[in-house]
Length: 391
Image 1 (cartoon, rainbow, N blue to C red):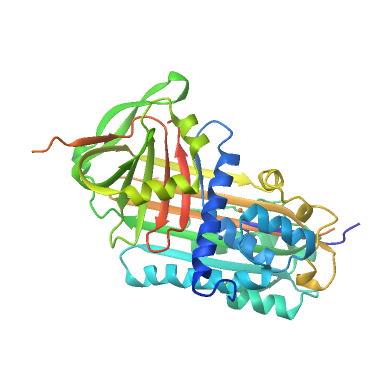
Image 2: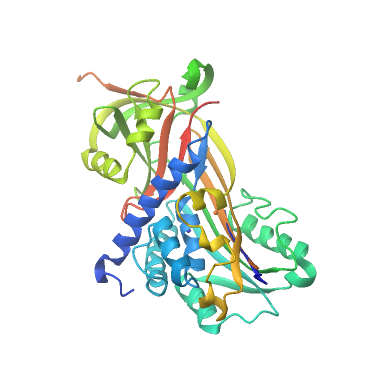
């Protein structure tokens, strides 16, 4: 029997030289689409941060070895091994931190690790994640005060997400067998480069799934936006102030076309649409929306082929030199609020380790289910992704 448990939670080198960051971004976007398909298999709205989940599990991957590492690499679409990934993630985070420093938008990314104070984690592992992932390291007393430690972790996440992500680690998740909790928190707030006027917002029909039509508050404006399309999809880019980040809205041309769009969704399709974006004079209408989601990601990851990490066969010997650890939970919460001024979004992922996250204007009217994502324009990295299916 394993004697230690590990939980991973979240709110996201020498590999290829100059192409290292591009490789990580491409892999993270592939992972975003794969996880979207898993989470999107159920009805309703959807929202998550693939970057947050990849960051939290990237720290965990740093300690994985053998079959455990191979399965994590495949499921998360990591382009390299545990030792090489961290430095590249660090470079990617440096680029995102630079966006925050410019001050046009607020973009905060933080990693944290809580390690049981009596357990013998390898110094090289702890130093590696502290340097590569810029992780805050804290000693914890899970053996005697698991409830207090969960409260400490939750308070840290709330602080890093402007209090949008609360109670990431529910009471009872941690216990005396918990040895480590690895957390990523990401927070974004940005104004639209071209804001919608509140006075132009009108009540309009939104045609949801199964023929259900509801009245929603629809934001409207006319301006030049970048638009692209293929046979069945229109793509609208809504840039945020500073033009470093943008929201990409994927709208099926058919009102009942969301299922077909999801079947065809791929990184190649996204890249093609983004490459076709051209400035167009448009009448735009999209609904105001607010989403709050919570996911336990163990089952989706098992479906993606990452199974050993959750079993007694798990090998996280890169953390402690033994094979006593496995993942007991991957917790993810996310929040987004879209209105006339802009967008506020946050997410956190926790991994818990135990002993054995007069040209006629075209129209873009998002009055039926659509997919959206928030991306870093410089690298193409998908930070958040979701679906509005109804209200």
